[in-house]
Amino acid sequence: MKLRQLTRSDIAIGAAVLLFVWAALAPTLSARSFRSLSERAATDVEALRAAALGTVASSGAWPAAAEAGTAPPELSGAYPGEASLTFDDYTLQWVGLAVTAYEEAPPVTFVAPDPDEEDDEGSGLIIAPGDAPPDSVGPEMRPVVRRMGAVLLYTNNDALLADLLTRYGTTVSYVRDSVWTLVVDDRETSGQP
Amino acid sequence: MQDAVYRVNTDTNQSRRIKAGIATGILLIAALVGVRPPGLLVPDPPASLTQADRTQGVRVALLLQAQQVEAFRVQAGRLPNSIAEVETSLPGIRLVKSSNRLYQLIAYTSEGEPIVYDSEVPAPEFERLRRTWSTTRDGS
Image 1 (tube, rainbow over the protein chains, first blue to last red):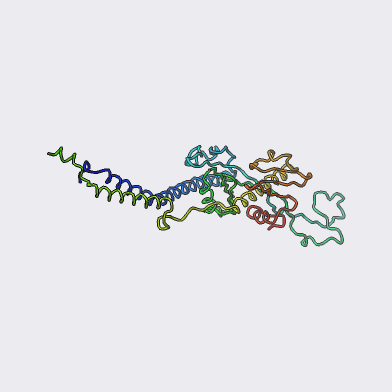
Image 2: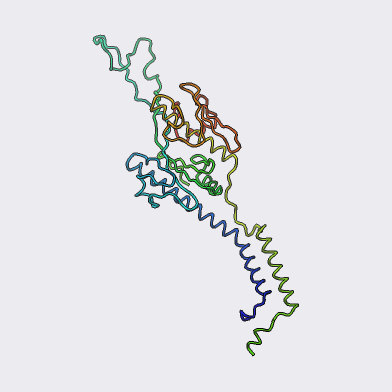
């Protein structure tokens, strides 16, 4: 059949078949598009996280906090996206965090009293008669500030927020409003998906 | 002769009606597949956020903010006068000082329900989360 011999009925059948194919494939194409978006977002998050961990490993200091969409100056060379953290469907941000932890204070020196020395200042705690033995005292804990960081991802796509939450778990990441946050800690690697 | 062939309507009325019926049938099936696609054509749906996820998010945000306040207290030897005074302040969280030592952090869920972090007696949910990042005074 030549093209010129197509009637309107033939064209209507062709159009209906095309619509059917589109309707049948649309869910799969949509899911594939979302998977691609989710993979891209996770890759960008991982790049930022790895760059920050690399910085703290090499210099001992976490990158400074930066505005949303802008990489911290320390990461401009390490992050493949250069300085821009704004993408089509989401924006990334790096922030610094602090947590308090308790660590053992240096042990106190106990000394027996020296009858010849009047000034015992600075020589440690004096054991007086009736005191508990020094080794019966537990370690003293003191608060210290430990640095961490966080990757924030801003998006209006709730499915992407949920996907990242599923990927990283609710222990080191959380969603609030339209922001997904991943806490980055250099002590552990459980934040990896 | 060739021109004459082009001008001839090759569809009879009967075949036109049949083709129109076929086109309409395919269109109806396409519409049905578009509106309610059969399970065979639908991949697994992506994860969705539950109310529990969002409430957990508010709790973690409160705990992180509390950590920023505690870090400020360790470094400055006092509580901050406002949430803006700490190095990192998360949005939507209010600081209420009840004394020079005690404070509460308040945030709201998307339903408008308040969740309070009390520095004196944090709720058990906060303690469980806190162990992820920092050791407590008893070393746990």
